Image (tube, rainbow, N blue to C red; front, side, top):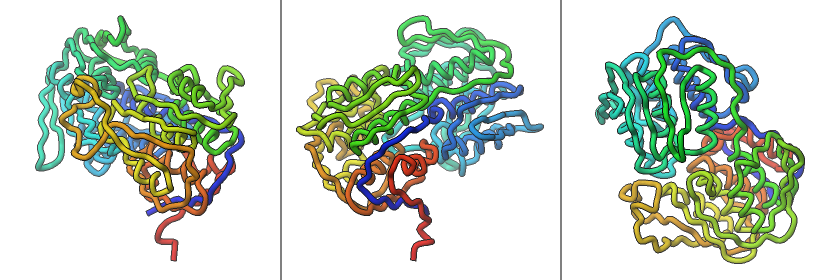
Length: 446
């Protein structure tokens, strides 16, 4: 077991290069299953989830070589349609291989997918869409696998009840080689979805956005080789922006994509955080003045992302006044709050008065666990101090790591494999900016 030992506080100053987007890299790797020809993907981050997905591809008949930040994917001599439990159950994105396997081989067997524990995150929206395209899918509790078959996938009119990023991409990947036309209504609009579409078009897919939240896919008989560079990770950019300002520091981000951070930058400006454009792909984030409390509500794109609310909550512990964070996308995304409270943060839970929660929230309201809440109030500013902390999900992990950097004293973070799922060499990059972080193996400590 590994952990981080962090000595704080530290002011973070310097330059950082943003890595490739996790939420594109994983789907781009899945897309390679749609062809036997070579696929070359550039700007791939060295993160745990990418390495798990490369394992998945290896089991499904692909040879994937990661050199630097480039993955070259070629076909092996044989293939299988089963994702092993020990790999797939640790990676939520493994469920997305359903479409490519069904469209090419008529069969797929995948384990119940894993990932962050931030809510139920059911894949029923994915399953319903695939069934509408002609697939037969059942879940067997005895072995923990979804068993799927399809003589031939065909086009369909599919309307998602709620916004679903991975659901949209799952059906995209299934529809490309399906017979006929598939139209997706209430499809996700995130820029990461468009980046995946760009890759698929390079491979020969016929995909168009024909209206607001509408995508039309014309099935083709085959796809071909492609070379593609994925976009930088805007969630990582927000993490370093918060790191700069919360630590009263000054960080210039390269590979910046501030054009996709509108809701965050608007809230940051209101709070008194500093940022300026250096050039088209470089943005400086810096502490400018004492911060003021600002409320945020998470929304689907182009709103304030759910992935940004945990680091924003940390920033608000350093702001004067009372701020509110209202989570509408997932039903259990405040696991970091109790950990911040250990460090002295003043945070309370509450539930906003919503007349029609079933319609208002983007998750299935009936999946909401007992004793969870959809909003928090943060009172600041607070001088955070050291603590022993546990990490439960990716963005919470990055948030708690930043908290220990700005807090006083020596802190210990457990569950750091969650951070490794989405951030490349995070402690080395933060140390290069002035943080004091040691990654240690628990057994090595006497």
